[in-house]
Every structure is written in C-alpha cells, then in structure tokens.
Image (cartoon, rainbow, N blue to C red; front, side):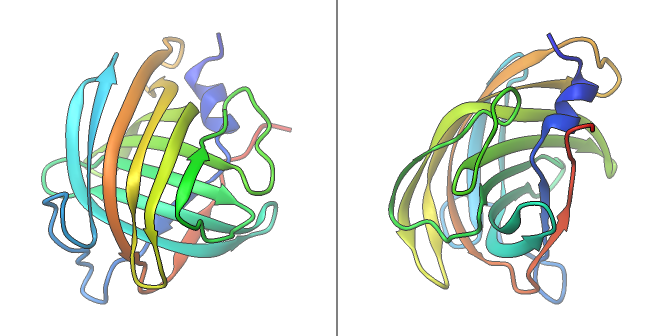
Length: 189
C-alpha cells in the first residue's frame, strides 16, 4: 500500500476558490445558496457544513479545469474538492468520479479530494478512488447536486498508515467571485 506521501503526490490538483470581497462565502446551513453538508464515515467519522463555490481555471498541465470547492465554516477547516479535468461545466446528469490514486484520469473525468487542517496547517489528505457526482441544476449563477465518493489517504503525522473514508453530501454552490486559483500537486517524476 502506498504511503500518504505518495498519495499526496498522486492527487490531480488542488483548487482554492476565493470568496467575496470581504472574505465571506455565505452561511453554512447546508441548504441555501453557497452551502454544502457532508457526512464522512469509515476510519474518520464527522459531519461538515460550510460554503460551496464553483468556477473554472487554467492549469499548465491539464488545461482548463472546472472546480467545485466546499470549505467548512466555523471551528472546522475541512475542504472537499471535486474537479473536472478539461474544464467543461457539467450539465445536469450523473458523473463517475475517477480513481485519482491508482487510475489515470483523462480529459472530462472528475476527481475528488478531501483535506483536513488545524489552525491553517494541513493535517490529512484523502484522494477519491470511486464515486459519483449527481448534478441536479447547472447555470452560470448556481450549481446544485449531490455526491458520494470513497477515498484513501491519511494523516501527515502518520504517513505509513492508510485510512479509508466515504464522503456523502449535497451542495448548492455559487460562482467564485474572484475566480479560482490553482495550486498543483503532481505525481513524482
């Protein structure tokens, strides 16, 4: 089994969406616009709620990408990202989340990542290995749906122990007002 260090290097990319001018991204009730809620089960168990944003960005290796970013508000600092390589905005429908750990995602594929931080410092990362994204509404001003994915990863302070989680959630995202900023995490060469 790969160590967590190798898993981080296998992640396709990380998106950091910007909120509004004042840094706010909306209420975290999991129901209205700019919100999400998710249940995490398996080796880590928690419930997270927060803000959901979407947008497109350019990446030098993958070209245009579409990103859905869900950031926990309040005490927690969890982050869930679903990225479509190739950048096309998804229409209403159900999409497969590709294996970004052992697979070879291609143009048009979706990949999923889940991160946890403490006081702004990353403490864990999980890379999606299977799942689905169901888009129920897609427009220039709103992106809604549900997702479920299985992921493998672990804690940075215990890189040799692999943990497995399942993430189930729903979102009602609004556009990232200042665009998306790409930060690449790539396979070792």
